[in-house]
Structures are given as C-alpha cells and as structure tokens.
Image 1 (cartoon, rainbow, N blue to C red):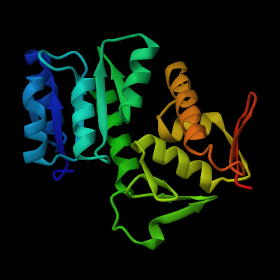
Image 2 (image 1 turned 90 degrees about the horizontal axis):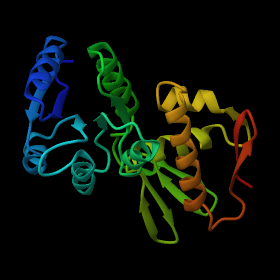
Image 3 (image 1 turned 180 degrees about the vertical axis):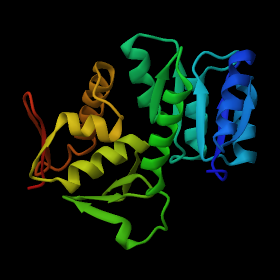
Length: 230
C-alpha cells in the first residue's frame, strides 16, 4: 500500500490535516493541495494513483478540476468529497468522469473503504494495449484498457464507470443481470443516489450504441437489465 499515491484537494486545513495524517498511517502517500488553481500542475508532476477532490474549493471547484484532469488522463480514478445534497450535483460529478463520491461529514473508515474500492476496480484497467484487450460488440470495437468505443473510425472516450458498466453488461450478454448486483459491484452499495446514477449511465450507453440496431440494453422492470447483442 505504500506505493499508492493520493492527490488530495481540500481547502479546510484542519479537516485536511486530519485526513492526510489518517491516510498516511494506513500506508498511503498523500499529496495535499488547498488551491484549485494549483491542482493540475501538481497532478502532472506527481502522477498520483487516485485523486480525492473536494467539490467546493476557492478559485476553481472540484468539478472543473476533474474536467481538466480527464483531459490529461482518462483512466485515473477520481473520488469526490461533497457537502452538496442535490441529486443533479452528484450526477454531474459522474458525468464529468468521477468514479465515486462521499458526502461530508464522513468517517475515515468510509473514506478508506471508498478509496480501496475505486482502486480495486481500476487495477485491471491499466494493461498493455493489444488485440486481446479489444472486444467486438456489434459494429463497435470496445478497447477496455483505453476505455474507448470505436465505430467506423470514430472513437469515443468513455469514463471509468461507463467502461466498467459496458464491460459488465457484455460479460453477461443475453442474460438478466440484477440491478442491485450492478450497483454493489460498481458503486459499492445500492442506495437511492447510486441507483439514480445508474439510470444516467444506462441512458448514456444506449446513446453510444444507438447506431447498431442489433444492440439493445433492455430494462427488466423491477429486476435489472439484459444486454441483447443480436
């Protein structure tokens, strides 16, 4: 665990100091920044394994920082810390490429579990680019480690969770997969907010795959989904 490097962005100095020291006692290496304007340069120089971003920051908020980071690295796991309670704010975080979120105030135990969960899901994604990493889905080519979806030369970059969801649906193609199983595997629990976010991601994947009528993500009401591949 000592090799795991966390870029932690928090402007509340007292809270930040507690969180940083607590993570370091668990063996993580923590780089803390308080100013949103300075995060991107630190990200580029530090090359962390995961980013933990407070949403409410001076000069530049966590959502904007996440957008900038995603332009540099499409795979780095991002965990948002937020005091916001509106569902649309949480959905926005995922749409910008966030992998998970945790509400303030939070316990250190919950934060560590969330970090470990996101890291666990991301480990298998940073693999060498080769043909074995490509999956043909109808007329599309899904490159797992690059998190891209190609259609006749047009390439779309997927967020980490979009990629994980598509992979999970494909691995269970033509079978019914329980909604709760998806939520627990990809979000860590099946609460209301995660359930709403899953709805958003299913809608987005349907849009990405719409050019091939043989592909369909069917909602099985009250149960889950079935990915039909023709």
